[in-house]
Image 1 (cartoon, rainbow, N blue to C red):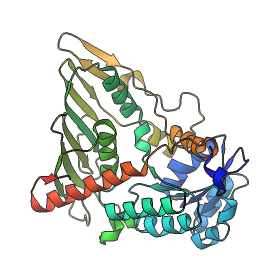
Image 2: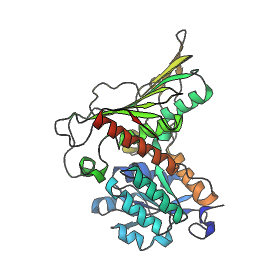
Image 3: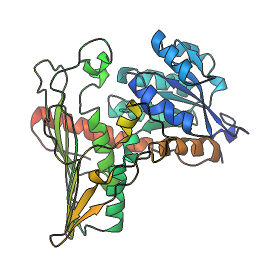
Image 4: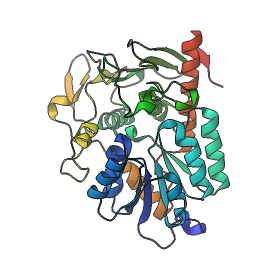
Length: 366
């Protein structure tokens, strides 16, 4: 049964009307192109207070309504079927609350909220409003992670003994200037720093594969002299009956380690480099382009069994699957593409990791 069939949302429509709040890097690169590319969604509205971004959105998406404030959007929320929030982390909770009070589903960029309690609050508010909060955990559709999922599902490595995952970058200088200054905000509600940023993706992927860990240990630091928030992190997830899981996120790796390194009883899989979609989007390519998300052969990972070294084709990256899932949710009654329970568990793990880094202790998860 379609989401709106109970009387609050899409009724007999064949296209869901979507409002995108925020048109910085996240909104313009990771959201708008995929909403526009999904045939069963209509990018009806973009909200940004920045005059230059207003002009960019209007020029790129013919027929889109451009609004200057979130309050303007709320005044016409009855005409919409979904609101997407790609705004500074500190605004996620208050903005999502306002959308839910309008009985509309809301997609919230990661992290959904600064704390697990706030994620839980939004989930409860959504239930009361007979709608949902959908976390934007798009890195589930990285080509390399899709490849890892496929290999583990097929049992190609035997019993998995160790799982290593990295998002490593070389940014030795902290960016200056007002653009994206919220990423350097030291206030607790800003949820800034690399653990909340890249760490959310790393933890979400691990949880998707292995579920709730028994305990968490972490080391978190500010390595760059001008850094005001954490820029280097190591997180270990402990599973009594599962693999050793080690996750790294850093802005100070001049020489990056493998993106994935999996060790199993029958062999190992190693993959370097990053998913190609982000670079393609920043370059102005579109998800409707031929061969979208496909990696060159030279970037493929390898399985090593000791007796054989075999290249493994990387699955195509497919961020568009998220908004195809949103369309199926709105129009067909399918479940959301990401469950809010996953964001809650991720938030709990990140809180445990930050507590571990402060105390040096291994934090058990109840």
